[in-house]
Image (cartoon, rainbow, N blue to C red; front, top):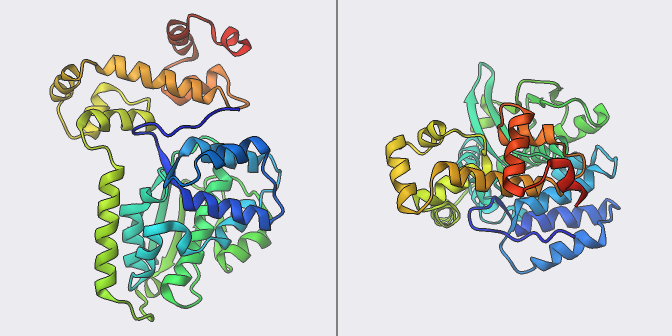
Length: 330
């Protein structure tokens, strides 16, 4: 049984969100393995869990061979399951304001991806760029079903999206998608994961909200985000490489809005270098990925950003002293 401990700068997810999923599973007749239940229990009382533990949870759901689970979980989630950001969304005067908060503070829920919003000819589009490596379709569908449900909470009326786009193929019956998205135009094999709303619904205001409460929740969200995000440049470097291990030195410096010389100077002051830190992170991620079934040398090479499988094989042998196949045999 793998022991998931949340390390500094490791991607994480809020405890209440994970527990809400587990509670819904019980109602849906889905039973988790004893090992996974024990792992979750070890984090009881903690505010956040390592995202890798939720990866294991979703992977176990994928193995259930019930492709509608993502939609069902998403429809059942309620604002209070999202902690501070849930109350922030509920205190928003309109869907457009709520989405702005979602774009800015979604990492408070989980660091599995990022949201963006775009104006379209027919209204507004919310796009989600995920960083998941397992159970991608299930998780994206749960997120979008929860957005559709949450939009109705924010608006205070039964609004429906104009269109929903998924990059993956259809997983469940069309009736399940129609139920989750209230008859919206649902498309698959799209270029992006996105959900669109009309201008009228985007700006609709029916509920009375307390401006003072909205301000208070925004301040709380800002404080929590500051605590969650890495503070020093070195911490930010490590966090970026954990999420995007393929970044080159040039790309890393650009992402941090510093010059390569400045980046090198800070790394040297911390008794490390780009190469040393990058190799360390790649080794940690490779060992994590090896815990998952179906991972191959080729898939790991692609995940870590190596130009070809042979380049990764050489690096892995340098890290561990063993060939990939020999290491897997133990």
